[in-house]
Picture (cartoon, rainbow, N blue to C red):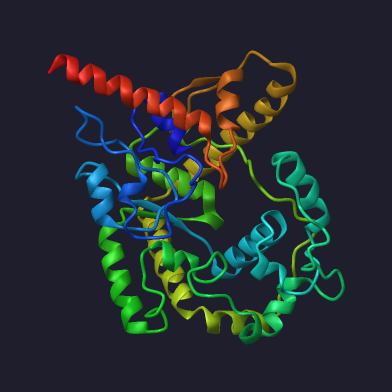
Length: 347
């Protein structure tokens, strides 16, 4: 959604040097991972990659009035989602080592081969144990045994990405001090569980239009049934993720307070946005099959009217998961280079 905004409003987005390296979170000093500012450009307009927070690096590429925006998710749900993804899609050894068969495993195999034809999975790797309970339940039943290193995909990842030191994460005083600082840095921290509300809040904060924050669901893993987690297991999990939960609850409270301060019209706008989004998603589903001409979205009290064409649907449905979109990045590199040449010519 952010990249689409950049494209349609002729903005520049910082692009990595190596387009095969899809994330820049392994170190806080990630400045060298991005293309240096070309001659004539004093800054990029946006940086939308998955990066670990480093204010100095952000200031290096972006202007001083940059808006810092992030999003958080309930830690247990984030853990379950990440565990299934890195276990069933990317076959990460430490997650495959937890015995059991994921509830989504058979369906996910079809998804893997559809989305990533070149990604071959070896079924005889020795890691797979199709007996016993779901591996999530295995993990939760004995967290001490199966616990993963802090900062990895399935342990306190949010805290890691916000720049917290994993060694100090068990210290409540350190976490609270870090949160006070982060609250000064971030202008908006959104909530995954209330995604539509988050988009409307972001739209209002940035003074965008509703059409700018439209989205259709892509890269959503299939779920055959919900995993039932007992209250005991939830409490045990929270005991091992106290720092992560402190961070999540802090930003959730802040999110709820921001919504409350928006007044009665906020809920009305969210309802309008949901209906608008449903209509656009339904149209795009048909448009992809029949190449229907366009959808006219009427104006509302919160948005001017606009049209959605087949080409717009293609942009809405572009999937940029952990593998970044090479089409977008090559287009952005071309835009940056052309802008640099134009600036040099006029100066």
